[in-house]
Length: 110
Length: 146
Image (cartoon, rainbow over all chains, first blue to last red):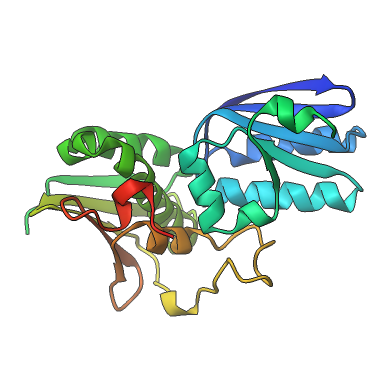
């Protein structure tokens, strides 16, 4: 897994490439927490290039969302493919996150 | 029943991705049912390996996880055994309940049960068997069954 971080009018966009799974989830968590500690409050994590997220990866997203909310911010997600959307629906995490079709939509109006 | 594929993995979560990719690449049925199995079987096997290493073997690098895969009679069966003391799978809470939805863990077993046709444990609870039917649609038809 690799990811790219960019800023868009006050929104931090993290684009994840590869699989977000138990073996690498801490890398994403650390990256986002560093941005949060640096003062960022609005986050979009984009999964356009992500094939798979396991339960540990889902757990990291839940954990990050909670920490960001505690700081008065928000984490939104975008570009879930059909399989990823199925995982979010099965676990009902689609009720916990605001999920956009693509990163442009997620950034728009944040 | 003879196994088509047997793997003995070290307790190292970084080995999971490669191990799952290897099993998928060796399974002809996975090729024929690629789209459906890439979600259901991949998720089930990944979650089972993670549970075995994290909770079963307690991240102990001296312990191993044994994986046996069999494809017979329109059925894909994977057995994953760790060297831990086992657990009671009936005591794992439902992660979709409102009081559990914000918990960062506890979704692995739920995903296995949701995406595979059968999930069973030995009496000790340190061995899980995952079954995916390849010829009848079953849980993997169309990618998943809610």
